[in-house]
Amino acid sequence: MKKLIFILTVLFISVGFSQNYWSSETDINFFVQSNTIVTSFVDQNGVHIVYSRNGGIRYALVNSNGGVIKYDKVIESEGAGTNHANVVAFGNDVYAVYYKNDDIKVARSTNLGDTWNNTFSSRDLVNTGCNKILAYKYDALIYIVWSEVRVSGWGYDSHFIKFTPSGPSWSEYKNITDNEEYGGDEPDLTFSPDRVHVSFIKYQFDEPKTRDRSSGTWQASQSVPFNYLPYTTNLRKGKPIISSNYLNEMYRADYASIGTEGSYIGHSYRSLGSSTWNQNNENLFTPVNKIHVVNNTLNNRIHIIYYDEQAVNYVHKYLTGTTYSGVIANVPLFEQSSFLSSNSNDLYLLRVSNPDYPSKIKFRHYDDAPLAPTGLAVNPYQQGNVQCAKLTWQLNNEPDVFVKTYNAYQVERRIKFLDNPWGPWTVVYSPGGSISQFIDSEVQGAGSGESYFAEYRMRALDNNNHYSAYSSTVMIEFLKFIHNSPGNNGSNATNKVNNSGSAALSYNYELSQNYPNPFNPTTTISYSIKNAGEVSLKVYDMLGTEVASLVNENQEAGNYSITFNAAELPSRSGSALTSGIYFYTLTSGNFMETKKLILLK
Image 1 (tube, rainbow, N blue to C red):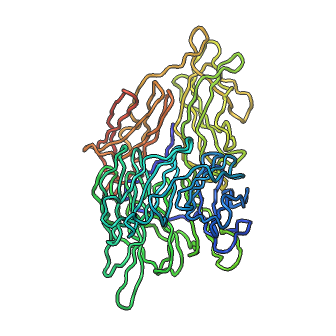
Image 2 (tube, rainbow, N blue to C red; image 1 turned 90 degrees about the horizontal axis):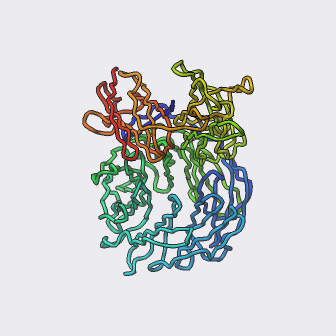
Image 3 (cartoon, rainbow, N blue to C red; image 1 turned 90 degrees about the vertical axis):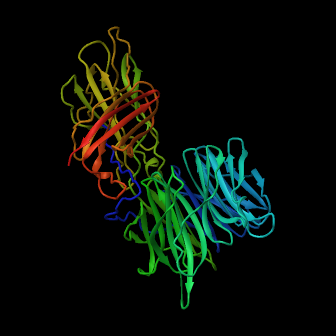
């Protein structure tokens, strides 16, 4: 059974107790020169850092605790005239994207940052005077936005381009503000399936706007509503963020009146399937001279660190739907340079303030639970003279999981004979974070005889012993259970065999009735997939409105089950789902089937 602690954050979840997962701040153990600016990118290899000073760029890699793996790897020497450096990585290939001599430059390292080719690729600006570049990894691509002085010489335009590292090649260039009379500045971007969302501040009129590219076609720009306080004088920046099925815009604006001035962080949002924006009336107030940082995590939280005027300190809060949490912790920032990066459900904060002397970069980790493993599949595997089951899965991308040499995953198995009850779940394998397969030889299918079933699930475990939710389950039939090591309860499995003794695994498309039904608040939905491919399992209310997306991924042929927890799925009004009839639909290839379930409180 796939135990999925499923939290579909349909934009209006109320936030309860806010737990502090921040580690103590530590120094990264090397010195950087005065007036250094830092940015970072996080993947399974660790926290990639580029730090810039006086026109030069260097690279460092640290682990999830801030421990140094390597540092001071020169990308561009000081005096080279660079600015606005970014970093992204694809395995051992690391890319720095930055401004130099009116070009967008891409430097590449193929050995995890040890050596760099800073002539790898470049592209001329449309004009001159670049004042911002941002680069984001998307699948095997790098999406880039930047702003530069308009060709007319007055104001700024915001631009987008796609960079393909494997080419290398540049494509799909677009002047995002080509239809704005006075251009636009402070671009940023995010993406959803088949879409790119770019935000910018409309020049002179100080209005946040977004523009989407949908299936390769750029749409008209949209004005984003914002809380225009009396005497609002300047919108500083905006940041688009995808959370659940919504596009959010987090913006910063200054205001001033007689005898007072200040700044506030605001929030507007719209459904990805709609062009209608909504405005959140709650603002976070902060002094004009204090910075803030924003990023999101995959549990549909938007995290903000800002100087809270009431707390008289920098604090961390997160936004879920339209509701802000309480203060998670005091998290100081430095005005010179502070950078917040995210990876799955975790945050990594770097900050440095050294205008006059060398110092060390400050490091802090917000360590939430890892993501549930994905892609779990089981297939027959010939081992000697017997058929066993081979489990495979996709590796987690979190550095505090990948780095572990043992117990980064816990693979569990349970067994039943024919229609008898299932036995207990037992851990049968606890590999390190770089292991993505397991052969269970205790479950064998040689010969003919009684029929057994083995079901598997797994979860991830990070360095600080935070468990993920369970993966989806997979099941396989076999004929003989060989319990080799007492207390271990197994370590390899197999399949169903036919009368000739050869492997004969086959499945049909099938959607089973949920059990129990009626239910409150949890029920299990089981299904079978005949052929590998994209699988969707969604729950709808009586009006046809989607209330939960339980499965949306590629799955191998096999049997699966998932737990649907209605208590964790509030309705759009913010209250819990009410008693009534709901429908669940399984779609895979040309197969689609719908069944009814009843929530009875």
